[in-house]
Length: 457
Ligand code: HEM
Image (cartoon, rainbow, N blue to C red; front, side, top):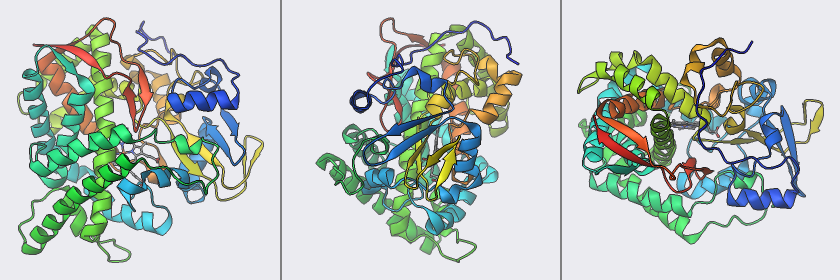
């Protein structure tokens, strides 16, 4: 049954293409912008097949198929090699790209650092990063570029929680700067899963991408080496890096070496700051689009005080619904790609081993069969029966199953906290004519940034 939802504005979405485009046109559009290349029918279909001369891709919107791939038989659907090749220069052998036993062992070491109790320990570092963001925005004048500000804030959260250093620290600031250079040279993340190139086709990493990746890894190596020494001397702070570097895999007794830790830190930094920054920047835009929603968030956040505590953030129910609605409309990771090892049958169609299986929060979160007014920004939907059902079947901003985002709990606390702190301190407004248009880079970003007017409350 569909619930009645209040009238709600429709924030920008690239206009979907007509249903029938040739493969060549699709790829040309795709290369320019993955999101506006999407035909309208994909927002209604349970599944779609794309044929290329070298392999096939299957976009799955059917919850039963998604469950099979992500939850029931994840070992039969490892991460796609095509994606792995693109990220290798930066991420090496990190948990984001590995498969099989290596991946399982890495998760056994990493997961305990992100459990509930530990998250509480990292909370003061998140608050400190939020307070720095308030000071920066307060000094920025009457207009901000929200993506830039939120990247800064999310990078600060990661450095403070992982290594107990603020973004102002020299090494942290250098990693952040290099990352921006890296991102500018990085082609669209999942392009490789669709482009009709054979597997042996040489991966073209632009020279700038490799050079930035080398610099970033060099800087992170300095941090992990220093931390290994501090751990040995008993002077290391009790943060996420120390926790991960001192945790043994309970099955093999092994720990990460400082060199292996570089791969993991690179992914925490990439996965943990790009994504949160994207979600927060879109959340601010949506608040600017809906002043009444913004006032409700500000009213709820007024209970937080200057230095929010952990328990108070857990009570911000409406702010959490706003953040979830932003994750629904602009999922930072728009698509994920797997590869099947065995012959499969998907909705009556034979799928040969080696196909690219695309799981798409972007399509699922706006799917007409699951959501009422799928393109509308409507935080109230999360308190309806439909919202609860769709949350189960058609909402996966953090993926699902054993490979679910390690930082999901972390990101939900960080996102709600920072959003509430900002809404409590400032009022954000649209700039007419400057509404952002979403495009997919490493994460879903705005084509020309997200410019907003800011006034102090
Ligand atoms: C709003 C914020 C975030 C979103 C939307 C997000 C989303 C995701 C998604 C969709 C995946 C799965 C990708 C795939 O399977 O291809 C993922 C994986 C991952 N995320 Fe997040 N993430 C967020 C924040 C974070 C944070 C804060 C951290 C760490 C501090 C983090 C660490 C990771 C790691 C390590 C993986 C790889 C897990 C694995 O493959 O086993 N993420 N994330």
